[in-house]
Structure formats: C-alpha cells, structure tokens
Length: 517
Image 1 (cartoon, rainbow, N blue to C red):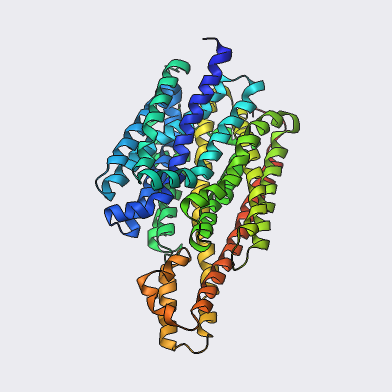
Image 2 (cartoon, rainbow, N blue to C red):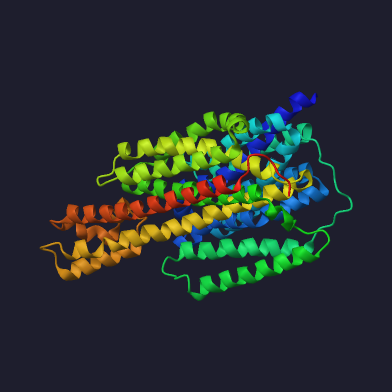
C-alpha cells in the first residue's frame, strides 16, 4: 500500500484506540448506580471502579512511551491494545467489585500504551504540512470520548446493562489490532539504548503517589491537606521527584532527557495541557452532577446535552489543526482557553435556582468551541518543540500533565464546591420558622453527610422521609439547591482561573516557530 494511503489508515487506527482509552475514563460514571446494586458495594469500593483505571493509566504513561522508543512503538501500541481488550473482557465478566477494580487497573496499562504511543505514531507517519490536520482529527476523537462518555454509557447501560460498557470494547479493540498489524509500520529501534530501570521505577511510583494523594483527598473530603494520609503521600512524592531528577542527571541513558524542559514552547504546551485538564475536563464532572442530581436529567439526557460541547470537537478539531500553521499555535491555544474561560463565566453569571437548561446553553457553546480548538495546537507544539528522537518522551510527558491536571482539577473543584455548599446551608435552615430545633439539626446532619453531590436524591432517601411532612419542606429544598448554586459559582470561577492561567502561559512561553534549544 502506498504511503499516501497508509497514513490515513494509521490515523483511523490510533483515533479508534484513543477514543476507547479516554472513553473508559468517563463512561463508567453513569454505570456506577447499576454496579452498586449488582455488587451491593459501599461508596468507597465504588469509587475505585473509576480510580483504579485512572491511577494505573497515569502512572504508566511515561514508561510505555520510553518502552516504545526502545523495542518499537507499534509493538508496544499493539500490546497495549491487547491488554486493553483482555482487561475489558475481564471487567465485563467480573464477579465482584474487588475483581472489577483489579481488572480496571490492568485495563489502565493498555489505555496508557494506546494513548501515549498514538501521538508518537501519528507524528512519525505524517509530514509536517499535514500533521496539524492529523492531530486535529486525533484530538476530535479524544474530545468526543471525554464529553460523549455519559451519552454512550447511558445508552449502553439502559439497553444492555452495565457490563456492556466494557464488553463493547472487544470488537472495536480487535478491529484496531488488525488495522495496526496491517497499516502501522514499525519504528526504528535504537539497539544501543537500554532501559533506565531506576528512572522507570521512580517515575512510575512518583506519578502513582501524586495521583493517589489526590484520590485520597477526593474520597475523604474531611481530610485536610495536613492530614497524615495526604501529607505523607505528598512528602513522599517530593522525595521521589528529587531522587528522579538526580538519577536522570547522572545516568547515560535517562528515562527522561531533562534538557527538553529548557524549551519554553514545550513547557508552555504542558502547562496549557495541565490547566485544560484541571479546568475544562475536571469541570465536566460538576456540570454532570448539576444536570443529573439537581436538574433531574437522566444519564442519557445529560449525555445529549453534553454533545453541545463534544459536537464542536468533530468540526473544529480538524479545522484547528489546519489553521494552526497560519495563525500560530500560540495564539490559537491562548485564544481557545480564553473562550473557555468566558464560557464558564457566562454560566456562572446566568445560573440560578430553579436551574434551567437555558442558563447553561450559551456557556456550553463557548466551552465546545474552546474544546474543539485547543487540543490540536497543544499536541502540535509539544511534539514539534523537541528533537525527533524525543517525540515518544514528549508524548508521554504531555499526557501525564493532562491527566494529572484532570485529577488535580476534580479534587480542587470538589473542595471549592463543598466549601460553597456548606457556607450557605446552616444559617438559612436554622432561620426557618415553625420547625423544631432538633429536627433542624437532624436535617443539617443528613445534608452534610450526603454532601453537595446528593442533590434531589437525598430528598427521595429514607433519611429525609420525615422532612416531607414539614410545612416548610419546599423552602428547605430551595435552600439546599441554593447552597449548591453558591458552590457551583465558586467552582465556575476557579475553572475560569485555571483556563486563564493556561492562556497566559501559552501566550508568554510558546514561540511562533520551533526552536530546538
């Protein structure tokens, strides 16, 4: 097959792979209630269905990138696809929540290989003139998977049950493996290069520790940052980082060539990716909670609404890739993140109780435009800012920054939401007339324990059964919704700050042309 035709099949293959890898981060959310019923799981075990995949996925991004450079990118990419398919099958057949969590972690190894190696394979398959378009289409697959997960998950769970969200990966995964075997050419191996085992271990444990500390904070909102559960992990991560840097400076063939961080454009792209993950992708979690738990939309309806964001990705992703060379990656990245910041501030300005879709729609349009425009130039900058021999390494680093950013954003935004929710809950309820003070304290205890995420569900629970007999029941419900609204306004402001930091970093650090330093 001619190279001019083969490269487009390569694009189809890697886009299919990254779509599955990123989809498995978001699709599980809507299946959690069904999984909980099936296994009678407690909330802590249930959260690990999400976190096991994310934790292993993030920790393995750098090692698999380096492994691809050493033994061959296509080999590692296809191995990752195979692991992902096996992990999906095992997850779909899991007989307990413990085994499901284990298989999800195994699945994360494959997801990391697919995601990290895909960028490297694309970069080497397309000439520089067409690379922007290819990365734009690749980014469309990523964006569609992240924002389309609730819709796809809702359809599958409602029609075929929760196991289908894993089993559906099998035919598509096998198809991607066959495409990879036939169309992706193996990269040249550096037979003189050896694996930096110490750097391998230190980098993996470092990223694992950082993500695990953030997960601990997310799962236990009562933990302060100074709690030993959190502080010990963060302290260990600092020690590991210092050890990793010292190791990489002394070994002959390091896991990461630290000199690539001297390139301002590369640093700008990574900061932008981190802030994009923390702001936009981390914010998706709370927009979903708003629509499902407070506006009463089903998982399917929420997914349909989120298409307003993901739909722009399909159109603008390839377009952004094509025009980035004309207007410059720097201004495209900064402009897209600025549009996203404006979009979330529009939502902050408009939302009020009772919540309505019309308050979200204008902001969703701007967030969709931002999401569609920003990923291709970020990837383009990171991959073109380094020497060709370091593109695998650059891909792994960029994906780590994006994924750690998402985890960081989910935690920080969750803290902000809870703080805003709690600050406007106690006093208004205590000021309600004609309610026994003991019942008020009982209500506050129920609402605080349920947390800001509960929404309408708490009023349908057995704990809140007595509240429905009160004359002021609707007033209490309005107070809870207003408290969540206050928290969402705080969340929206923090999302905007994250996106603005990314926009400024892009404008200041990213240079117009590639400069290898």
